[in-house]
Length: 543
Ligand code: TNX
Image: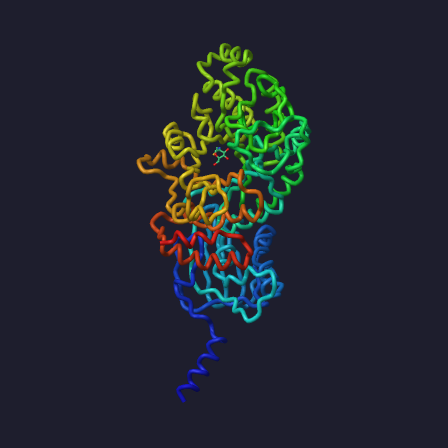
């Protein structure tokens, strides 16, 4: 009899609603407030999204596409709520821009938000509440598409939650950028910073200066020869490795990103890391020496833009006008890092400029350079971002500082009343190793495992409240000297981006490594189904 009871109860179980416990809720980043209730909601082929708004309909696509692939259903959208089994969108004007509320009971789900960003994040949370097989590209049979009854109130800790991709040192196709945007949205990250210019390649079409991409986007090989002492490619060597994005491709990418609440911030490096531009137009440097696009190149690279000549400013202004026309972001990043200024010291035009502008040294000359760029950027209603070197010689009045050499630059900028984005190498450099070096692919150096990223905090101890309010958020940087393929890029980004997203979204009080590690095991399964080449070495460093 006992055996019979056991058999009947286990048979029954498979048809019954799943019983959820808090351990089943593995959402990353962790929602701010969550109340688990009894019972569950089950998605079926009849589940309906209820909305009258066209842009909300766009947001539902994330789940509609998933169910189409994984369950073989075409879920419908309706303007009126059916009796039960629906997902309703409700506008709540009291919520902040990216905040959302989720109320799930057995008959319906209500997502409240004050705009598309919140609705999208509500949908992304639903996605992570569903079994990981929802990520499957082919129909999964015997899955129960249930989520627990619960209520969630959620909003971000920081408004800037970014990832930088260096598409210069190695070139990545638009489709990979779109895939990355989807994955950023899954983790409620909202900025993709594109490092479009560096010594090793100019990656954005500029109509007024076609040679930037005809010449500057191509180099002889894809190996990074950094640090090996080899001189630049000779100007007559024809490049075979490279690529660039057309303006139309970038506009399309920007529009795509907007549907995922991701802002694309372009970076056009000034005044250094620009051999690719000088290879195309040698007159932009002080001594006008012809150079080729280096694959890596000698260090330091001294061929940088000449601020002695008006022509340089004309060129950059024309470039930036085209750039600002493509990217609606209120920010334009102008680099500013690692400028070796020895040529400026020897240049008659630069000396003349320094005399006429009463500049004491080359740091002040760089500051003058950046300030001129800022005037143009501000005149178009936009704001300038630069790496923390832009502090040297005096900050441009409205500049936002991206602090990479630790947090000191960010701290100083906040003290001076400037906005700051924290990207310290110690926690945010995803070109670093993330596991034991002998088991990892070659990396740039450094050691930044998942557990270390998880301890990141953009607000530094000792900041006053006013200074802390200038900290917009943080960002991971993936420099790509060593990263030649998409799958390697994925490997460096995942799983570390998950840790970063939680440090930037969730409350400081909720941070808990053990709890995060447990939720990560479910995220790894999701990555498996999504076919993301994540670093398994993350397990090796878990305590
Ligand atoms: C420094 S971080 C750079 C990059 C390199 C990176 C390697 C920064 C603003 N500049 O050009 O790729 O180190 O980690």
